[in-house]
Length: 271
Image (cartoon, rainbow, N blue to C red; front, top):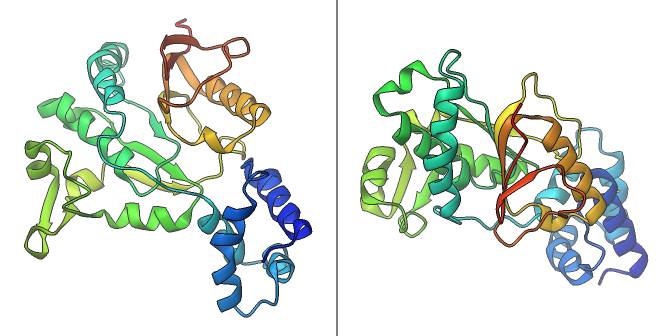
């Protein structure tokens, strides 16, 4: 069982390095790490943390992050966002970027890939035959290497695809194992660039983004971390650019520079 001192050490480490607030999650930390620590031969949580902090390869740190970050996502989650993206954001972008034809869209909590693949499907559907003239690749990042591997593999069960419209299923997925599993087709896969990234790090983008999806990730952050992150996001959006957050999440309206379009959809002032 984790001691108070060990719990404090791990929660402080996660807060300092990743902005993730686990200060009320002692039972979760214990439950998710206990078996791994036991099977790895460490005598206690402190011994494991010594290895995390001294391991130059970063392998144990990755393991810690993979075990402590929850990734619950599914296709068509909060679909009203994709409807808005298709009917409002993309027509605006088609006009705004008609000369350069370069769209910059970032999904900052890619998890196992459902969300960025959804964004890519909406883009492919929207641009249709014009698609080859546009750069519509989606950047998809996550802190967890474990979920990114699943996302890049792009294999989903029939159950995971149950909410997807049939024509999308036929267009973008290939049936495997007699229909119990589906693989993302190469033409969809090549539209998403997956990268490991910690939202607490400086943003490495050379150009500003047109749209940022940052859904269901800020639940892990305290108010201060959230404020700083939202300011960074704002600074890295093009004027008029959109931010989508989870429908159960909120931004502090008194401190955010964003204009509120509707709950969970925000916009940077144009021009």
